[in-house]
Structure formats: C-alpha cells, structure tokens
Length: 346
Image 1 (cartoon, helix red, strand yellow):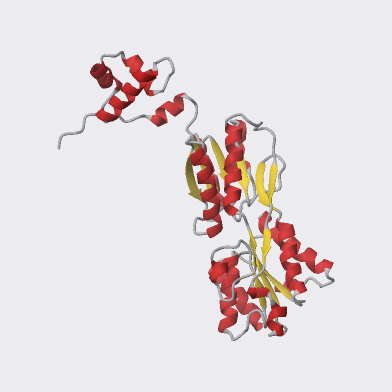
Image 2: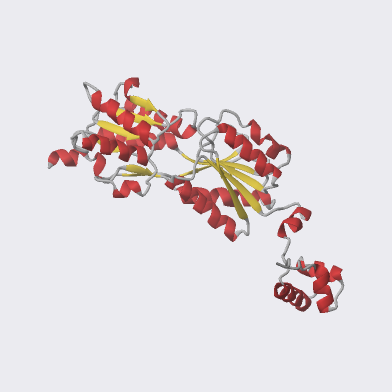
C-alpha cells in the first residue's frame, strides 16, 4: 500500500502561490496576514488534509493548553462529579484535561506528578492519595512557577491553593442530628485519618459527642480503606457487640449502604434498631432502602471553582504566589435511614 503523502506548508504555499512564511503566519492566525488570506489558508489546509501541529506551536509559545489532574480513583461518583466540573470549566476556557489516578498510592502520585511536569502541563489539580505523607514531589511545579491547586483532600499547608468544604462542621452536624433522634451510642466508620477529610469528619463527630456529654468510645470507631470488604467487616463487628450501637455515621455513602445491607440481612430494622448516615450524597444514597441521610458535597461545583481558579493563575489574572483556601458550603440531607423518632412513633 502506498504511504499517504504528508502535506506541508510548502505544498499549501505552492497551491496558493504564496510564500511559505505567509502560510506559517496564517496558520498561526497572525494578524500580520489579512483576514481574507488567513481564511483562504485555513480552508486550503483543511481541503488538502494538512495536520495542524498544535503541540509544536504550543511548545514555541511555552504553553500546551493542558491541565493535569491527579485523583485517587475514577470509580467514585464524587470524583466523577469533580472531574465533570473541571472539564466543563476547562472546555469553556479552551484547555484540555489530562487525568491520572493514583489508586490511593503515594508512589503512583509521585510518578504521575513527574510525568505531567515533563509533559509540560500548564497547571495541576490534585486530590491526594490515601497514604501521601509529603508534598515534596510537587516541588518542581513551585520551582517553575506552574500553578498547583489541591481539591478536597489536602495537607494543611498555607503555601498552597485549596478548595475544600468544612468537614469538621459537616461531621458535627450529622452526629448532632443522630443524637437529636435519640441515639447515644454512635459508631463511626472512617477512612485513613492521614487525610484531612476523614480526620476532620471524625473531629466533628467527637465535638458533637462532647457537646452533648456523650463519652467518646474508641471501640466503636473503625478506621478502614472504605472498600466493600472493609465496610462489611466493620458492620459484622458491630453486630457481634453485646451492647450494639444505635447509630452509625459512615464517612461515605457507599460504605453506609453496604453496612445497611449487612444489618438488614441480619434482621435489624433501619432506623428502628440502628440509624445510619453517610456522606457525599451519591446516587446510591437516593436509591437505597431506606433512602440514606447524608451530607450534600458539591463535587461538580468544587471542580468548576478549582479549574476556574487555576486558569486565572495561568493567565496572570491573579498572583500565583498568593495562596488561598476556598471553603464551599455543604448541607445535611435528612432521609428515612436516620429518622428514629418517626420510626418509633409508627
């Protein structure tokens, strides 16, 4: 089979009887070439099958119009919502998105942070892996003044831009709601306490217990990886207890719904025997039986704001050296899974 001829600017120049330098400037949309000639150049290039070398042009301009995004995992409704928000904002700003998932491992996060730096991304948005202990692998971005922003999972460091919610307040509100429903022995299923989101939700849980003079019991706090297996295991541990908790606050909706299923399979009534609440307001919270009390976590809005904030830095519309923390509002969503008073009245 004969190889397809690669069309060059010289071929276009010959067709239009123009200088190659004029073709080059026209393809770069240079205002030195009049608009009618630029249109003729673009139309002819498309007709002849010219491949626009966007990557090479961006390198010359020191820009790739690409934003890197590193997330812990892709199989999460909340992460999908963040990515959707980022993508919508970047599309409207004419940027592309390059995504990597760390699979909750710092070593992967280090590898992808370096790879994206070498691929000359214009900026980077990061949701940290579960076991990330240091931010040293982002030093290259700081040295090269490449805008860097952390979203949701962050390390408490005032030198970086962050978009978060007040997880401590959210944890307090959901625990207080369970206490107001008459619960006094509330178990807590959490993720890695190295991460701010889980550490702060637990802090809110503990603050609510203290505010209502309920002793903190370490035996009913389960630090896990929040997978299906670990959630089932925690639920079974609760079922074995001689004095069983009358409520469970899980740090995400999937774990909460998995625990509900284990409890129901064991013959417990929800919320009559044990009230359950989750976190994130995932789709699963609205289709579980009963529907799950949770915290509405504005993932898409978080992604949009993160992307918008990063783009303003890249375009020089705000000072990349100035660090900001943007705190978004979350909202307690009360549903049947926690309404013990209503259940007891029936």
